[in-house]
Image (cartoon, rainbow, N blue to C red):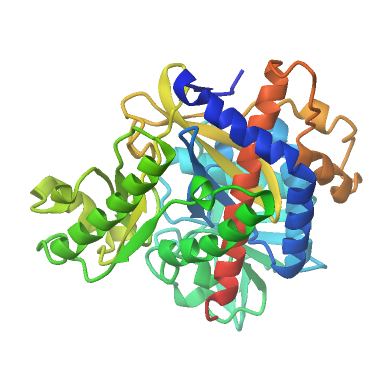
Length: 450
């Protein structure tokens, strides 16, 4: 059983939210279908979700997800069918994919993710090769993943406006699993092959605040659709620029933003009768891997930071200096697995949910960032046999499969305490929230210049 436990004090609030979502399920799915006719979903993505019972919202949207190895392997048929749909949208005649991962090769768990993504694409009927733009790899090289699988990384070459491999492999589609934190290498510019996600989705240009600006639009419309308070699915935030943590520059500006957001949270807590202590998460406006993140309970927490905290916040992945941060409303996570704090992470391809896992941390509290050293992952174990029992091969129509997947096989039974129903309902709600972030990402990318 992989369903997390939420403490009794907040369980009734969560149940009320889940009932609201279920009661509006038909409207929600019709609304999503209409949105996807207007907006093109990113190729893939993952969403971190926090659940305090009284508030259940996404807090981060990753457009270059790196945890496919943490998904339940039973979800592979769903992921592969979603991949077919995503690839065909990018390149209708596509039959070959060049997968370009991050440059780091010592992280065997990341390499396991590359292997899992490779398998998803291969099971989708694609010819898949793994190319690398790492200048240190000059010939075809075999690496061993965390689970003992093997992948071959081959140096990418460019001729004209196309990418090739040494033996003439000429892919239809280039799929990046590299978030471009270190910048966009020249070899990727102005390609005639389909390149996904687009270069503008990388952290060289993308900002979390831009995503949440788009999410504000999506959350407001969705809240009106199902008649809920938008705040229950949307965290407050502000952006601070001109920061230099190494010299304390911008600290007062940051402290003022922290104070404003904390005051807004407290006002909402007072209105809702919530007794929790407000907090915010200060994090780099660009970047991932849980770097450049700290929990803050008062404006004084960001004044006169000690050297250790300043060093932690000053740089993120690839050693990039942090000059802009987002001050985001903190959401307590009152979910636990095996008595450890947990948060769900949902994975999507195209517009479809393909699975997810719980990020679990035994040494962190409900107000802390769980994406940190010491975390581990527990795959969501939803019984897909009951959802997709008629999948017998790749010839199954994706529309039929995903109509079932979107509903997660839910039947509103008389006995609301049945464990499977509870799990299905919770996962459906996670999927709704994740798709809201995916839709926001679609709008975000549309509004970014090419």
